[in-house]
Amino acid sequence: MVSLFIIGIVVFLILSVTLFLNFYPTLGGSQSAERKELFEQSGHYKDGIFVNQIKTTMDMNFSKGMSILKDYINGIPNQSPKNPVPVLPLDSMTIVSKKDSIPRVTWFGHSAFLLEINGKNILLDPMFGEAAAPHSWLGPSRFSDGLPIEIEKLPKIDAVVFSHDHYDHLDYDSIIKLKNKVDHFYTPLGVGAHLLAWGVEESKISELNWWDEVFVDDLHFICAPARHFSGRGLLDRSTTMWASWIIKSKTYSIYFSGDSGYGPHFKEIGEKHGPFDFAMMECGQYDKRWENIHMLPEQTAQAALELNTKLMMPIHWGSFVLALHSWTDPVERVTKKAQELGVEVITPKIGEQFNLNETKIEDNNWWVKWH
Image (cartoon, rainbow, N blue to C red; front, side, top):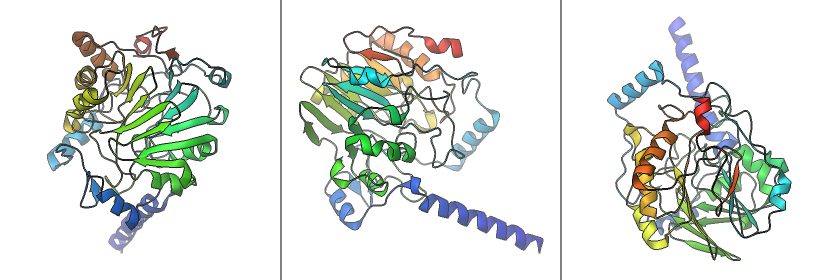
């Protein structure tokens, strides 16, 4: 009788988790047959999933799984800061009042940015949620007590650009709050299905394949390759595309890496669209066991060199525990390697604004005080 009761509890829990992970609204939308037919024409879609330009294994065998479990149990020193990381407040009036054409950048932590360029406000991967998970109970919380500004206080947003659909980049609650103040959303193929499921009008969504381009007034958006994967549930891995992005004005060229393992695409992008004035480069949540999809800090510096960028900023760090390294390891290692390679690096605080013609910031080593 006891064994039957235990089996019943286990079955109930499995069913509950399965239902949650397949029907909870944060999971987003699914791909219709018509959409899948279009994906088949992309050149990067095979057997129902999107694929990388080069072979990218993500196999997690028993030995790897056990080694990861062991590391989680033992813990990693300094995996999160002892105190909340600093956040500089952002006043909406400073955004509204900006008139000049020199791009201004504000980091919201992790991979979320506000890019002000040519009089337009562009959000990149605006994940403003408290936790990188389907529900705040299920994922790691932010290192900071808040964000530079609440979504409700943001002015009109001309464009939102997404790199892929993982929870630490595409957040349900953020979209619900943002959707009515955004003119247009730009995503890789398939990601638009999530936005549609969350009530964004179809006319406000553009889904792009790698190397597709769109012009918005005097701005040029280019969807470029990355080396990663996608998915928000148990059964939808790689059913949407992942990408990096290039944003160009007449005088500035900017690169946003999204999430990516190291690969030949960086050199290809640099040759096709470089040099760049500024590159936001993934540097965090890595491990030698999954470096194919999250490059190591030394690879980040090398990728920036191959992109031919004047200035590089490490991103995807400083906000969440999503891997088995200390929270300052990414920025410490990438700045060291970048110095060796002659790549200029900027490391602002969360909420600290800087213009691309004046890249001096208050404290380029601010994290040391929180180490």
